[in-house]
Image 1 (cartoon, rainbow, N blue to C red):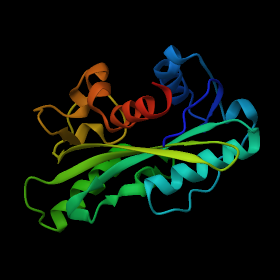
Image 2: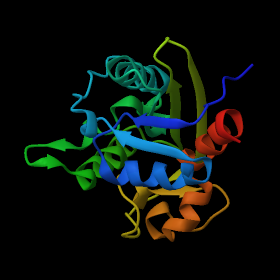
Image 3: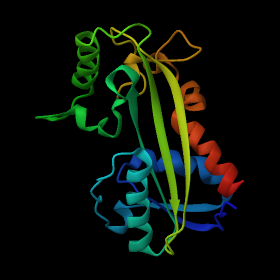
Image 4: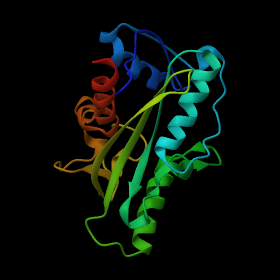
Length: 203
């Protein structure tokens, strides 16, 4: 039996203000007051797991223990089939450069590695999102969402972020980078995970 969120305060285990606003808007109909790790002065815990669920669990439980409040965390990234599902949990790490994150560099690396492997078309990939809602007593609920698609080149579009300009979702002839953000948000991996979360714990 899925544990329901009983209302009140929820910590979103992130320092990303944009992500906090996005989650607050999604949960607004359920009378939830959201705050972030930054609001509570919490550090980012080390993400030492090799799965999205594992890393989301680390973040959610760390915030729940530190604040005594339920906490929600997500971990997400892109998995490219011909690269043995890399970059996967290292999606952001592939973008780390000398001057901060450079996703153009990361996208170029994906394409070059596919070319080196002479990967066959279509070059299948999927965006993955794991959401973990954790309580201070150690209980958690896990929800996952996947957006399947393929890697395309050259990069297309300036919408979205991260690897969006090289990802074309199944059923569409445009990339996430070319898609209106609201259209993307309806079909994205995070949207699919959130719909499960809302149905399971808030609906």
